[in-house]
Image 1: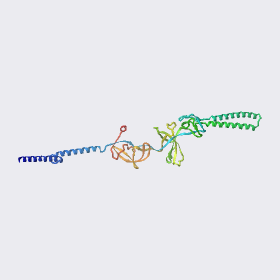
Image 2: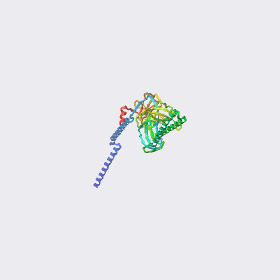
Image 3: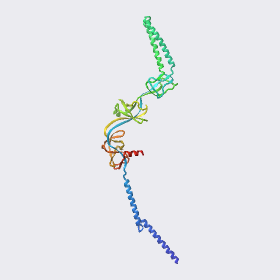
Image 4: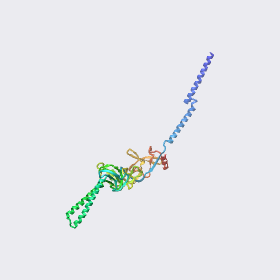
Length: 383
């Protein structure tokens, strides 16, 4: 019996201790009771400090300055251009044909060779033609001697005028036959019609050619020309003698061409007007090369202008970001002529204002900006 009571007391003691431990744990977690007040206060203080720290960080990073590059609204000349693509043409580019049928016996010029007017480029077999020429020359020589004797006899009144006329006619006939034989021989030579450069050789030695067949192509590269076809409204603004910038593929620098002539008629098939440009003598360009011509159609002087990089286009509206102090504001503008780098401003800006040219992405009215110096721009570009 005593042992039973002892066990019962020990069990109740263990339960009491367990309940005390559980109550202490609940008090710590909920902050209620003697164990939770201090801990909860510390937790609340830590939470308040963390929120304050986050708010402080957000306050510092809420509106960071955007690095931008700016330019001034200034007065300058602005020109409007029309671009047209075409190719370079030689002053003369002709195909030299064979004037007779025969076999090519010799080739005297190659592609790239410079030839003079009348220079032999190729020769056809002409032995028979040369023999015919020699026979005609001998026949004519005989008639010359006969005519000389007849003239003496006529002077001595040994023959009549009628007999002399017969000999004279025979002489003239042999001269014509000699000249025809010379032409026949001459036709066996392919000659350059003018001084120029051989651009293509179409025959080889031993080849049988027909009369009229192309043997060579020769070009005269002085001067070089470019023909562009422009809409009638654009061509009406082009004047003879105007300077035109011509950009050639493969060359870094533009060529300064001049408007040589403007066609007085409109092509009914295309509705365009042909404008011929003359490249400067000695221009480093190849015939057939692709070019882009930039023709001035209008020009204004002393007008307000901003760099084209500053322009923001949204639908049909155009605007710029004007920088003042350390912020920007968006201003709608009315524009006029465009050139390669600038655009004319008809309204919305005043001379001396500063506009953002680089770094416009993400800007809005009120955005803080930091204007980059030239050295900073160069450093960013080199990265």
